Image 1: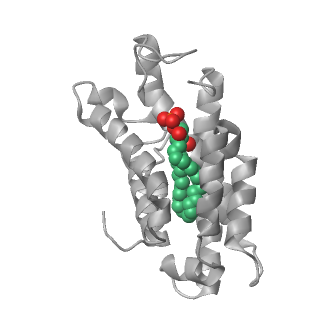
Image 2 (image 1 turned 90 degrees about the vertical axis):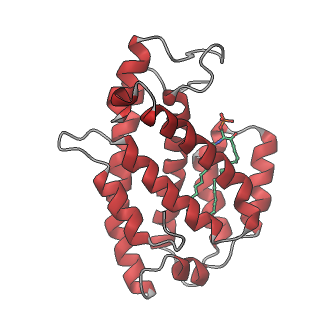
Length: 211
Ligand code: 1PZ
C-alpha cells in the first residue's frame, strides 16, 4: 500500500474487484479499503479510531484469505456459500462464530454505502459546501442506522474536525477540481455496482442484519 492516497487507485481497485460474471474479488475489495484508510489517515489523527476498526476488519478477511480455507474466500459469493454451508456464521446473535467473514464484510459493505452517498454529495457540491455537513448527512442516511448512540456521538465529533472541501479535493491527488469531479463521476458507478451486487447477495441470503 502506497502512503500517498490517489483517487485513481481506488477506482482501479474497485474496477479490478469485479469478475467477468459480476462476482466480487475479496482481495481487491480489501485493497480498495486499504486505499481509503490511507486517505483517512492523511486527514488527521481524529479519524484513527475509525481507521483502526477498518484495519481490524481488513485483517480478519485477509486471515481467511491466506488461511487453510483461502480458496473459498476468493469472492464474496464463494465466501457466503462456504460459510453458510458449513454453518460458520452466527445468524441471530454472536456466539461461536463472532468474527465470520460474512459479518465482517457486512460492516465494510454498510460503510461503502456511506462512501457512495458522501462522494456523490462531494461531486455535486458547490464551492462553499461544508464537508462536515455532507459527511454527516450521508452518515445519517446509512451507517448511523447501524451504530449505537455512543459511536454516533464520537463520529459526530470527528466530523467537526474534517478539513474543508478544497483540502479534500487536494488530498484526492487527481489534479484540479474539474478533474477530480470527472474522476468521481467515473468512480461512483463502479462503487455503486460493487455495493449493489453485494447488497443483492446478502439480501437473497438473509444476511443483512448479521450480529
Ligand atoms: C473521511 C472522513 C471519515 C468519515 C467516516 C464516516 C463513517 C464513520 C464510521 C464510524 C466507525 C466508528 C468506529 C467503529 C465502529 C464499529 O462498532 C462498527 C461496527 O463494527 P462491529 O462493532 O459490529 O464489529 N464498524 C463499522 O461500522 C465500520 C465502519 C467503517 C467506517 C469506514 C469509513 C470510510 C472512510 C472512507 C474515507 C473516505
